[in-house]
Amino acid sequence: MTSLDVCRENFQREFGRGLDCAFRAPGRVNLIGGHVDYNEGWVLPIAIDRCCYVLARRRGDRTLRMHSEQFGETVDRKLEGPEEVHHWSNYVRGVAWALAAAGLALCGADLWISSEVPPGSGLSSSAALEVSAALALLHLSGRAMDRLALARACQRAENEYVGMRCGIMDQLAALFGRQGHALLIDCRTLGVEPVPLDESQVRVVVANTMVKHALASSEYNARRRECEEAVVRIRERRPHVRALRDVTWKEIESEAGEWPENIRSRARHITTEIRRVHAAVARMRQDNFHEMGRLMLESHASLAADYQVVSAEQDQMVALARELPGFYGARMTGGGFGGCTVNLVHAGEAENFRAELARRYQQATGLRPDVYVCRAAEGAGEVL
Ligand code: GLA
Image (cartoon, rainbow, N blue to C red; front, side, top):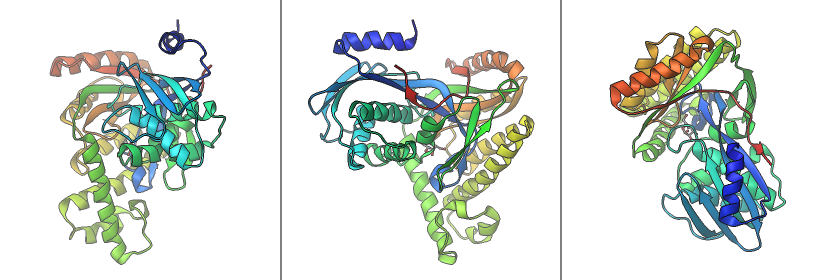
């Protein structure tokens, strides 16, 4: 039985007969371009072959009945009810709220949610949930929305309803993922360009440290504010600048000498990271994985020293990976403060690399990591 068959049975046990639709949306891993999306720069994620599934049935009332397999909980909430602090259902209710705000009236629904994307791991379990739930709710309500507008609505749900000021990379990756490709996303124009990733030569290995620090979301929002402060300072001399994407480090380095240390180093990370994304894409197109891997290591170092979002466990995972055969490069991925690293590995060595990295990390920390060789997968869609 596939996991979808199991979900179907579970849906029926919980809600009875009469499933109307089922959608899936993938998690993502970002190869390079850490914290660049909300600075309107370029990022290079892949959608991964781990998904969130939402199985759904229309209701005649204004209730959302939601069951999360991961949290082992069913809750009933009114479509228009107030949000609660820190509850998984806020991601679904936020999406319903954002779609309604975009003028799309929704019906009530029974929703069975089953996700293979571990929460809080930096693989964007939240966007996978938002996007799969949004597609299911739209389908049940007989509504349609283009994918770009849908990505924006899901981001709005997370920014304004959940209170996490994330950029738009995760939602775009979940919606526009392409099998065998990374996505070069321009986070200002929202242009998405698929870039082939030759998985016969190179594999992406995701390594979950299994540690997530509690400050992640408040520190994330704090980084955003620091970047905004850098932009305010830059605009004193260059009023046309809208985001850190509009300047290079060379252009601002001398004036940044007068800024507070944290603002200077955040701006240095973002402006140099954007350069690294472009260089990495060029290397990837030439199948030059050694150079691409080197840029990923530079990204990791910059995220650690200048952006200060890398946890000790992520650092350790990268250090252990560097010792292994087939290694090209690695970096932390996602918001930081724990979660996963992403590794670029020679295809022929990937399975060995996976097993050996897991073994060494467990030996070093006593924690059993989830390390897996992933595939670049398709974006969200219907599965029934
Ligand atoms: C989180 C956010 C994204 C992005 C990354 C960092 O995953 O949801 O929008 O900012 O962090 O690159």
